[in-house]
Length: 155
Image 1 (spheres, rainbow, N blue to C red):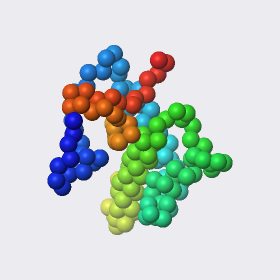
Image 2: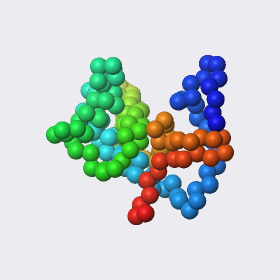
Image 3: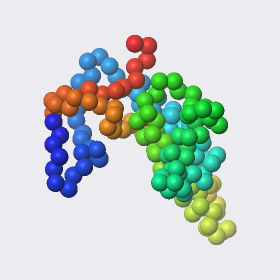
Image 4: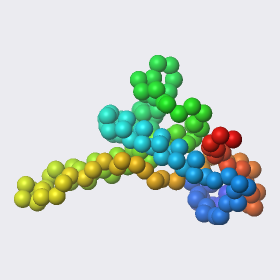
């Protein structure tokens, strides 16, 4: 089991290990996660003003989550049964991907005209992020085994 150590926060500690999946592939979880990232990337691109609002003032991922869930959402979240923790991780990945693309695009715009012989940076058409298994997506970590919340298609 992970034990708290001085100056370490367990919620942010990453552990890389091999998983025995008992017949389950994580591809469905990864595919669904990347579809949600793409959905939120498009939303961030439509409303980039939420990126610069501090999370304390309902900015960042909260800004986009409020527009997709709850009563009368402006952009209804199209993925039923998607875990909250995965959704929030996907929003954060989408914001990061948009910020990366936007900074490259702004740098391209600021180049002198003589250096603009290359095309502008394109927005990603698909993503290949691995889902984050943050607190709430796993339980019963014994050091030898762990229970993960994953998406399984048709089972």
